[in-house]
Every structure is written in C-alpha cells, then in structure tokens.
Amino acid sequence: MFNILLVTGGAGFIGSNFVRHVLGKYPDRRIIVYDKLTYAGNLDNLQGMTADPRCTFVKGDICDAELVGRVMQQHGVDAIVNFAAETHVDRSLLEPDAFIKTDVYGTYVLLEAARKYGVERYLQVSTDEVYGEVATGSSKETDPLAPRSPYSASKAAGDMMAQAYYVSYQVPVIITRGSNTFGPYHYPEKFIPLFITNAMDDLPLPVYGDGRQVRDWLFVSDHCTGIDTALHSGEPGQVYNIGGGNERYNLQVVEAILRLLNKPRDLIRHVTDRPGHDRRYSLDCTKLRSLGWKPAHEFEAALAETVRWYQQNEGWWRKIKSGEYWEYYRAQYGKRLA
Image 1 (cartoon, one colour):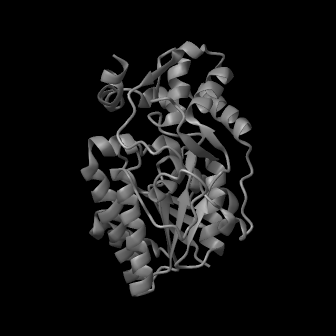
Image 2 (cartoon, rainbow, N blue to C red; image 1 turned 90 degrees about the vertical axis):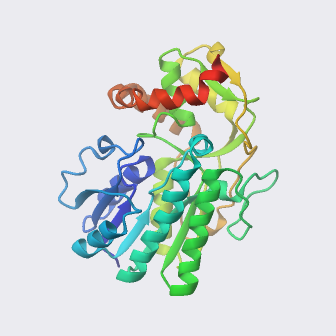
C-alpha cells in the first residue's frame, strides 16, 4: 500500500483537516502538502503538523508541471489526493478564468504526473454541485453531470478528465463528490463561517433570496473519513458520493447559528439571489456506505462544535477578515446590503 501521499491544496479547509486525519491515523504515512497559498490557503491551518517529520510543506501551483514533477521525483510520491481547487460559486461568477486554470488545467497537470510516475492511487476530490440542481430524489454516481455555475462546470470538467485518464491510460483514478462541508478552519467567506463570524460581530447576515435553498451538510471530519475510505477501499475508475444526510433549508441553518450565539433574528437580511442559484442538492451515498463508511456526527452537535471553535479561535479568522477579504465582501454584498 502507498506510503507517501502528495496532498495538493493541503493548506486549505478540507485538505488541512485531511492531513491532520492521516497523520493521526497512520503512523508510518508520509505527507507532502503542496499548496499555492492563495487567499484560502493558510499555513495557520497546518499549525503543529509541519513540525512533524512525516509532514513536508511545498509552496507551489498545481499548474506548474515542472515543479509538480520535481516534487514527485524528489519525494517518491506513490499516491496523490487532489484538494487543490478554486471552490466558491460566488467567486466563480466574478472571476471564472481562475477556476478554469486551476480546476481543469491544474487537474490535467496532476493526472499527467500520476501517469508519468506510476502512482498507486490518484484521488480527485469533487463536489455534489456537478450533478446540478436536484428537485426530487438524490443524485447517484451514475447520474449525468449538469453543472450550472462556472465553479461546478470546472469541477465537472476535472472529473471527466480524471475518468478519461483512467480509461485511456489506466491511471488508477478514484473520484469523490462531497456535499456542503463545514467545521474548523473553514474560510470565513463561506456560508456557515460567514454567518457565525458576522453574528459574533453583530453584522448583518446576507441570506440569498428566500433562504429556502436546500443543502446537505457534512461535518469535515466525516468528509475526511469518507475520502480515506474511498482512497483505501474504493475501486479505480469509480466515483463515490460523500454526504452527511443532513438536508436543511439555508434559513434553518442561519437560525440555528443565531440560537447558538444567542443573537437576535433581526440580523438576517434577505438580499438579491445570485444568478442560477441551485435550489437543492442531495446525494445517494449507498455506494460508499457499502465499503463500511458512515458519518459519525449528528448535524446539530457538529454545528455547535463549529460555533465553539470560531468563538475560541478569533485570532485565526480575524486575521483573515481583512484586506482582500473585505474587497471581495464589498464586491459581493455591498450593493445587495445597501
């Protein structure tokens, strides 16, 4: 079994939690964390891990084929887990070109490296959003892809490229598609940490439209165990959905956050919806569950744990909510909140 993992995007939200999970579970595993450290990549997310001799950090862009190849050779990488991506739908509507470069071309670069150096596993971390809006029922891995934003379209393209490399070159590709993930170290422009940190500062909570969009929420540690299960027990060429089974209206989640923080409901501000906002996502996770995985966290308890983490780690998120963050925030919400 593979012992040296290249974890791209490993300084981001889910990636850093996955690195923490692997180092805690597998004493003989080595990890090369490869991250460009864009706005959402943060060395603070790896606090305590980079001092571990089993963990090496390399600053780099997955679009840099020369550096990727050098890292593969130098460290003898035998498995790749690709978290590296531009991930926010709202940002993709403002600047779609960055999503094409990272999520499509960057994936191609990694697949070429996997092919050239003969890795034992290549796991592509994807999203439920590639299935598009799901009015009824739940998306299965065999369902057609119907992305409706530049973000989800770029992720779907990366998935299809990964599957093509499995068929054309026998690269041992596995794809996971996760539902909306939340928990510690989540960049505070995203839904749950945005509303937690805004509410803590008594700032308005900009809820798109009527707030009755439905998302399935997955605690980050459960997402990590799902990826781990697919990586070790999944079959090359296969796709595995990872969902929490916690479908909630967005407005229900916002109200739960306000209750946990003992904040008034009048902080909620309904604002103009974003273009093409998918009404509902839902995943059928029977396939991954058949490998022995299931989420370990109940939504309400996990949300309370997440709120506590942001209360106890103000230094982490206050440093982020400055400079570039507020430029984006004003561009996204300024007119909506005016």
